[in-house]
Image (cartoon, rainbow, N blue to C red):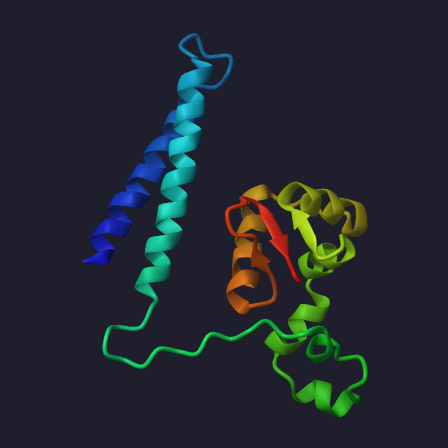
Length: 161
């Protein structure tokens, strides 16, 4: 049943994206207030879509809940003291927190950064121009892996603390 709801919300996201594309600022029927409303509705539908997709991945009722994994502490995250033989045995996920550019950027900013700051630092440090939606998706995946987390009630702000 959740699949039907997800499909409906995806259709609405596509609809609002097409409306935003159809009325650029130079269009004769451009209305700033209406475009802002479309943008707000698009953001709300995208948030709803993420929520529904997360609900779809949750275990069914009656199955044991998985224990929430706490993000690793700073000591656990530091792999510099490990020998090469052990590092070769570790999974990529275990090593990713140390090498992921986005995690390093957030850490360099004191442990908290906005999406705009991340995009700026990504260019300044790595000469990489990141598309906003692609970087946002990478941050979302890092959040799911427990390497970063988004700040509750704040959109586009991430922390490693």
